[in-house]
Length: 356
Image 1 (tube, one colour):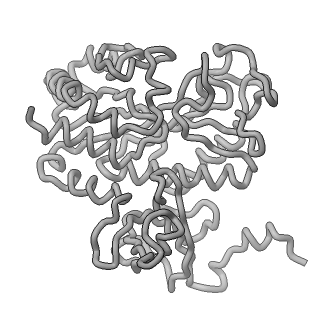
Image 2 (image 1 turned 30 degrees about the horizontal axis):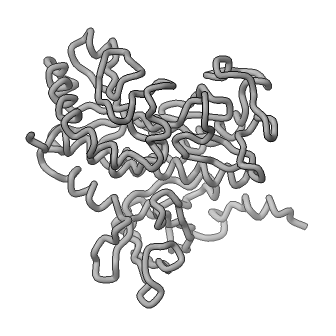
Image 3 (image 1 turned 180 degrees about the vertical axis):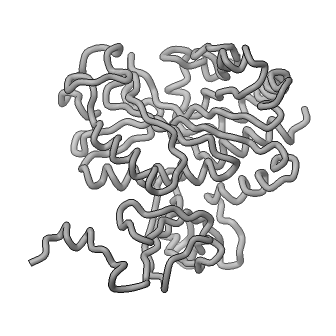
């Protein structure tokens, strides 16, 4: 008799050409990920060759019950690390039957910005540092923390090893490898300052693909924690008090910034970001005011400042960039629950297209 795991891991390639495509989209809250699967006649590598599909938007907070159909447009394909073989994960965005993007479809507006010829010419690169916290399922308390109590103060946990300092490494490593398998340009992982908190980095990736990759990496992480029986939290301040919050630092450069004389372009771009500070903050994640306090390696939410190698600044420029006179900068303001479509496109729009 087959075990359940035998059937879950069943290799279909010897018996059928058909594949399974998991269609993935962002739900009504802007952070909840939804997905459902369908069978296709054979392997597909081009999202334009995939059929559009639909779902009940009244069950995801995205449509009224009397007109609930929402249409999924496939936009990006990744290999499926769970089913493997030729099976795929498909990042989709969402439209009305008439072809209008629904209000929670943030990808559509981002795609318009990234398709602007002036933005295309600048080849914007992003490296996004996604922090998150692993929680015990039944008590919603970080893994490794005593129930109803606290571990020792921060200090020994960042990039640590040891059973008394590092919690959840098996989940983190499984996620790392699954992302590489999927074709996500994941560039690294590390344990964070608060115990039970981790980070993965996506990039450098160009334009809207960076945001697609972050969303799929989040989806894979949700699936892995589902298997492991823990909960992943993207809350920017999951534990009040003297504990670090969780952000999504966004590293950014354009072609002009990466070439000789790029440091002057970087400084002009940072000046533009400062002029639109409030506008960016309002779009950089819910609850970010609980994180951006001016403490725990953050700048105060109402203050815009930048500096070289300053982790307490809104924008940090690396020592290498200053020394070489070209490179990239890091926007440290986005919260861990930010929408990468909004943040990446907003940074490009402000620094490339906007004229104060």
